[in-house]
Amino acid sequence: MPEDIRALSTVLAADPASLVYVDLAEVLRRRGDLEQALRVVNGGLTRHPEHADGLDCLGRIHASRDDLPRAREAWGRALAVAPDHPGALKGMGFALFREGDAHGALAVLERALEVAPADDGARRALDTVRRALGVESAVPALAPARPQPAVVPATAPCAPSVAAVGAAADAAAELPPVFRGLEGATADILLFDDRGLVVAGGLNGADGADVSALAAAGLAGVSSEAERTAQYLALGAWTTIVAEADRANLVLAPVGPGALLLVRRERGMPVGLALRVAERAHAAASAWLARQGE
Amino acid sequence: MSADLERALDRISRVRGVRGSMYVAADDGLVVAQLLMETVNGKAVAALAAALARKVGGAASATGAGRVRFLRMDAADGTLLIVPAPRDLLVVALTDPRVNVGLCRLEMMRAAEAAA
Image: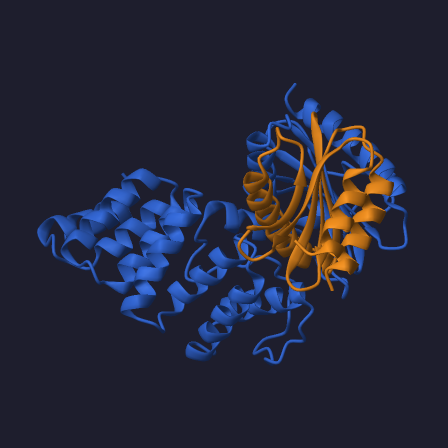
């Protein structure tokens, strides 16, 4: 057993009412032992049902388990107890953004930065959401700006998926060159998984900043919605979603189990041509994923 | 259903391969007006189309693409088409997989204008 877990467990065993349960649960969560983390935090919350730090930690654990509804519920409970809890505000911002409510995320993250103006994580998350919404940042950065595409509650790498999204985006230059030879291979074509993790390619925003992780997080939810729609309407498996928008046309397609492809093309390009590009990108992604499985 | 909306839906439904068309309230996914084949569950189509439109709309913002003007989901056995319309409405069409999407899109755009 790692030393930090052993020490925290000893403290908690000696005093089961100790608030150290949050630290222990957080360490377990970061190590990926999510079920044990959940047991510990639930145990603590049984004794301290209105402990905002504990509820915030519970939200992070659920987010790490990719259980967004429960994460959101936990952060909501934390905010009901402590409306200005920075961690819960950031978590709620993350949850709202993942659910496609960018405006809601914006409001919550603005509040997070109001209550914790030195919180660089909240600032980066807010900037990212503002960029996604095309809203100019009204908040001067405390430190030199650095591309940080993921909306990450900064108290911790709260969900492995989210943390990995940020890490993946930071390491965008190291992503595999799956779409080499295709126009926009690293700026307009993105391969990601159904948990919102960037796998390959890349997506840049209008200002040239990398928004891959942001897009992957937002688009991951589209896949499950499409699946549900196709299933309920007895349409069979969904194959493509095409969205014609003000500034660009988007083509989204599943690539094997658990992987999704996004191709973005400027609004002026005919949709039929964009679909052809998407077909080529799909073939490249399929071949590459198949090679990974060999 | 007003005569204008009825005519607009009728034009969409005349496109070969269209199983049904409807106006849907974008915020709650309820049917405002519809013209469907008997086998199509209008309430389900409306609710799911509105949910999908919301999800894709949010995701499109995340990619910097802006506001969605036309949405199409292709599946093995059919296609769902969605056009946002004034007054927080959606024009929705459920079609066979081989439908002429371009023609259907044109009629749906007209239907969106009719809702103004």
